[in-house]
Length: 332
Image 1 (cartoon, rainbow, N blue to C red):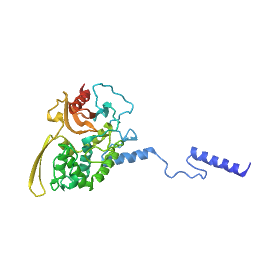
Image 2 (image 1 turned 60 degrees about the vertical axis):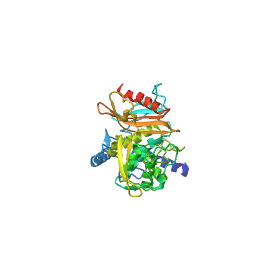
Image 3 (image 1 turned 180 degrees about the vertical axis):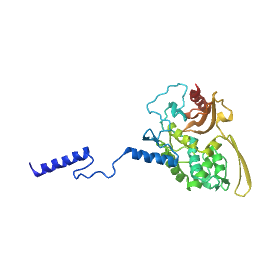
Image 4 (image 1 turned 90 degrees about the vertical axis):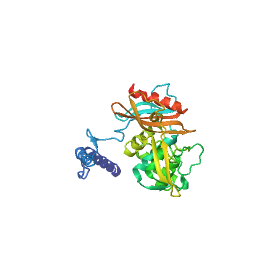
């Protein structure tokens, strides 16, 4: 037998011994063998320290343990739903009650502002005084505004009401410039937060939702984003408000008072909510590219909460026809 062949046989024997025992050819034992019970104890201790339920039945919790998970090939039939995409998510039982094209990338219009609010509330100081700059001036025809002007000074909290109730694109730009120095810089923060939430089919290019070919999301990603927003008490407070009066000063130091109103028809009484449900927050959005859009939160008589979303309906009345159709599935 040649030397090369003998060497191969010796190496093969060493490998076999290492695989079927805890030692290699030199008979050295592993210094830190993996013992699940020890790792399990470590995870349990960590969960006690940070107040989280890290371990369940001897395994680490997955990313989506407390999220609704929609199967890509799931089909819900309902010919009455003629919007491009729609979905209803049960936050209590983590179930998808209804879905249509939930993973299709679409323009979100002003529903974008939910993410703008998340970033501002989580990482900003709501008491900051913000002086509106020229960067906040929106000239696009038909864009919704809260009508703030360069030189106006408001708190960040007031801007959030201007963002969410009258859907002020000017408020969105003012928030972005204050927090990140530019609209583009703030969009980067939005995308980082979306990635953190697992909204991997989402890409933001601005804080307001005015049309951009690369500004896209999905019904499912919007659920992830809105679900995160509902964890923030200040967001719940703002999105649950139908009217707000902002008192601030203009560039000349003069007092200004403006009243802003929300646009969710269920909350303003312009559309009847199905029996057994209460709508307690939401965000509308409309552009030519996005059509008519709405995401909102509701609860039933047992205090279970739900998120529902409709994207690219053909008109405002049609948007609410679609939304009524899908949220009725909660109580039917």
